Image (cartoon, rainbow, N blue to C red; front, top):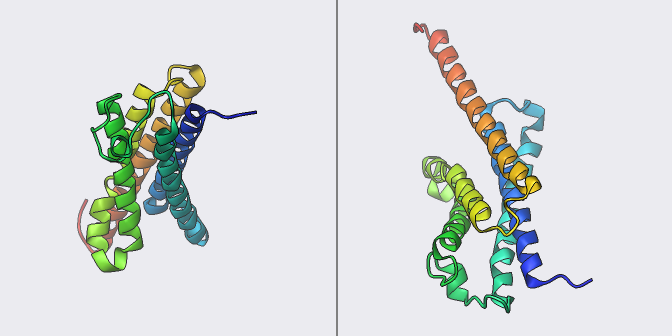
Length: 186
C-alpha cells in the first residue's frame, strides 16, 4: 500500500490537531486545580509531551507539502504566513498557528529566562492557536464536512470550552476563598 503525499498531509494535520487539543486540554485541567496533587507531575509531562510531539508533526505536515506534485508548494509558501498562492488566507492561518505553538513551547522551555509573567502572557495564545488550527482544518480540509470530522472539530471545541470555563470558575472560586480567609467580605 502506497500512501500519497496528500494522504500524509491529511494524516499529519489531523494528528497534530488532536495532539494540540490534548496538550491544551491537559494544560487547562492542570492549571485549574482540578487535578489531584499526586497526578500533577505526570499530567504536566503529558501536557508538554503532547505539545512537543504535536509541534513536530505540524512541521512534518508542512514539510510534506513540499513534495506534493499536485500543488507544488515552495518552502516560503509553507513557512511564511500568507505567502502561498494556493489558499493564501487558510494556509496563512495554519502557519500562524504553527509559529504560535512554537512560541508557546519555546517560552515554556525558557521560563526561567523569560520569567513566569512573560511565559503566562505567551501561554494565553494557546486557545487562539487552537482556533487558528481549527479554522485551518475546517476550511481547507478535504474531508472536513464528513460527519466524523465535524464530530471531531465540534467535540474538541466543546471540551476545550468546558475545560476553560471550569478553570475560570475554579480559579475565581479559589480567589474568593482566599479573600474570605484574609478577613474580607464577599
